[in-house]
Length: 396
Ligand SMILES: *Cc1c(COP(=O)(O)O)cnc(C)c1O
Image (cartoon, rainbow, N blue to C red; front, top):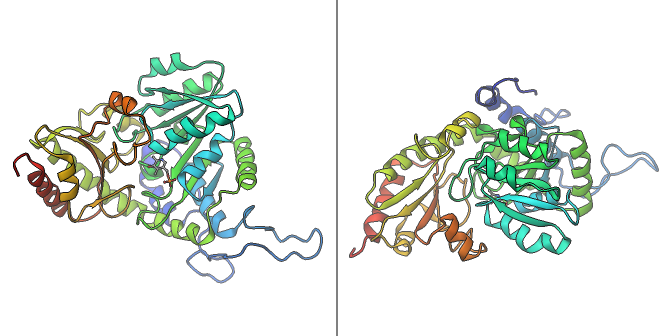
């Protein structure tokens, strides 16, 4: 199935909804089964030497995983997709495209695990990094040096929801001979398609909105060019961090309902953001879907909405620990993108591996909370938050 060409937001709206349901491998050709079969096999019978029937070993290729990989390539508008055992396994495989002596420019409030990988693992392989505020294009331009071979960014960033102009940043990276790699986990291809904006590689934690039900850990990468496809295919097979057949099937199942889930997620997020904006218990709301928010204009150009994750800083006089204990329906925990609303305390959870000095410089303060707005009834979400404000207020 091909997607209509044109404006990146327009095509995301119409054809995308059908592609989510029927893209990749649509059911089973042989039996007519509507659901892609789960090929729970490690190896394949060959008809003697040289008699391979298309598959040899499931690390190298598996039909269920391939159905997912093809679907993701179509959704992101790339030439090939690759499925991994986790988002970080996908990001690791992509960074393996680099070599000793290379340097990465890293957008400065990315997912804590991505930071940890570049801060603690890759330097041992001779690959360095530098943090940059990629939303400032002049600063970004000035940060390139000949050693920089990749730009890694998220838009919106995690957890402060800063917006980077993906088209402009990718063009700058290309001019300097560097790959642009965009983590599109928060938006999904339903809301934003970085390859269509000029990025070279998109990565995802499939654990979040794509899977959508908090029951799976998975990662994905989609590349724009056939050359990158060939190199990443080699790395995927050589390093082996692949997604299992059942988990591939579960992720395909989740992706089919992405449009209806995401529409509700976003609708609820808008309502919650507006309520928090006026709330006496809130010092600041970070949500690019609010009119007038930092980066809202750029975001509106490159994405269909502000997504469904927002952060807010509690006002003075409200206790963040009491707030975290007071929510009832809302899950307090790590992760995001599930059907259930999930509240996270970045400073002690997702971003605990970021040194305190950097954290505070970025604005990831102790009073900051991140909320992944679920698809429950919006009144119930607002009521739960209201009760938590009341319970966390000084003297409560
Ligand atoms: C969760 C997350 C990751 C890591 O994915 P895992 O599936 O947990 O390995 C990477 N990037 C972002 C933006 C995430 O939210």
